[in-house]
Image (cartoon, one colour):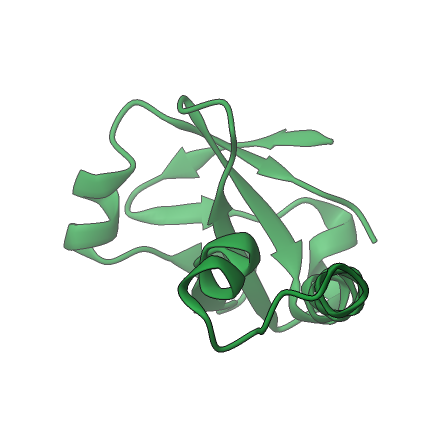
Length: 102
């Protein structure tokens, strides 16, 4: 896990992030931080969770299934940073962004 810096309305990428163009931002259980995944890693995690839900008998279209899968925000890298909208900056004010390496 790598703590990221937010500077001038963008999230600055670490070197490992430069291999990816699309990222997924999800809230952490710790309400003071957000987790940043590459799209590929997030999709793998989502597939694993869906498989576990199926084994447990949870319908992915049910309310419980949607809660278990959570919610996320898809972001695109531009150069060495990920632009953040005003509404996202307001939502995440004072929170940390943590890169979850592949």
